Length: 281
Image (cartoon, rainbow, N blue to C red; front, top):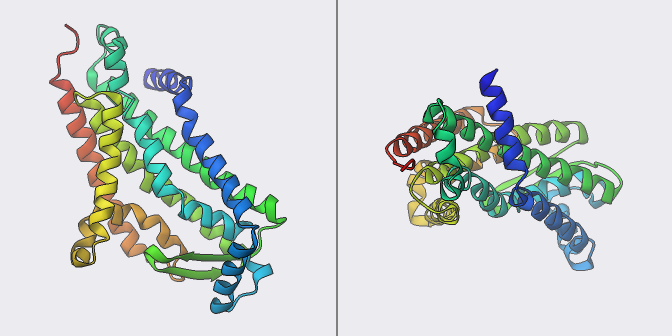
């Protein structure tokens, strides 16, 4: 009960900050721009040609499910990493900088308890942001097009190309949303690690973003393809496997195990580093 109360207070403090809502606003604006631009003649023609090559009818597939998935695929990694890193990198370092954490640690509560509450808060924020992204993408696209339609998924960077009827598409979308929450949570874990170190909030966020962008650059170098399973972004993209015609649950389980190890290491190292810091003098 005490942990739940502390978590509630931490979440209240987190969502009272204006910067917490930047990611929600950015995703909402990006989705609106994508929907507007897809109504222009040339993007519609290109999309229709792609569907003809796939063997589908434009009016059947150009609906809420297809556009919703498209917006998530092309916006999560670029914007999601930035805004999750912004909040996670801020969670500890900002309070150290302001001096409020020093007052908190003067009370009879362990550093592990304080950091555990903050780590869980980062995960709650991540889930809230991802659910918002997926829900608004699907609802907005469905309202824009006047229906769900069938699902067509086309994402060349990961060689994904598949089509599903409406019922299966809804199931795939819901599964991908849950898997994306798992994948995105590791971004918050890395941000928490850097926030526990002796770094400014902005520096912690930049370091987190740099880790994932550098990892993505290295993974996309053709000569490094034999080692792609060791790159973090390879496992973060495991949520996209929900759109494969035959879902490879074995590969997904292996990726989740990898991400779980990263989670544990980041949390343990972050708490160890913070435990050795002297911030009360």
